[in-house]
Length: 365
Ligand code: F6R
Image (cartoon, rainbow, N blue to C red; front, side):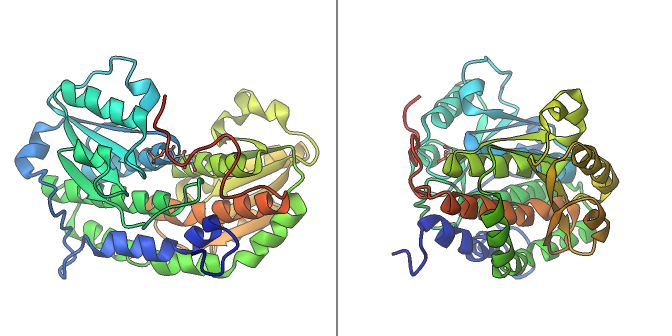
């Protein structure tokens, strides 16, 4: 059932154009309105909501961080994001004006489920973004937005993440259209761009051999840093999690602006730094951060949008993703990071689909 692929993970990475497209197209009618069948959230409901909580674990939490950006920017509602194991024990302020969004591939993650029950007890309206139909999280929610990633077998989540991003954008856009926070042109522009995502993801996948070669030269690193600004920092966290869980390399991610506040002390000759620089507004700032780490000997792999060539002067290697609007880049920029993690793990001889100490769905605390 790996259909010729060596591992489920790489098969699932390649299934992303399909997952993204299904998740998107099943929710758009012929006039490009978002149809959230079975998801009520009417104008009255949304008028009553003054706060959104997005709660999840691991990769789903990283999708939630992008969701916060989209909902705040498109729908102008304040959003907090929390990991489920923290949310459930900290007595968060939740009431009947709160919309609680649980994000979960399996729908069975114990902490996420417990957080959902806690929010429900406090009167929140519960919307979940779930991949597995009929799972516990789905059953206990008021509304469910199903992602259409299809079954995800590899422990490391890939296609669930990109479909969760699409779901987050659609929820944010739906809220914006009910609330009237975007102009028709803005709304149409985002939908139009979202529809190009499957093709753009495919384009990155078609060029995977460069990343494979890069991985073959970099798999011996003892530690890897990921950095970015704005939305890129959330993708940096996801790329770092992917790498550490399947390759066992000590990796972590920081907001590039935080470098000087401590982490730069760890950069030495040959340290691998993956620097995401896809946000136009923050591009120059990222170029300076890249210079800072290079000056201390780092080997920098930059991730940038096609056309932004200045980065070639500062980074050692640049992985390009197709051009798109800043708000939607996570769907694209995560792809080279997934591929990099995968090929590094393969080069290290790791059991990619079943990393040690990890289970696909965490139904215990
Ligand atoms: C990482 C990974 C985990 C899950 C997390 C939540 O690749 O798969 O971090 O994202 O355990 O799982 P779900 O989404 O099933 O609640």
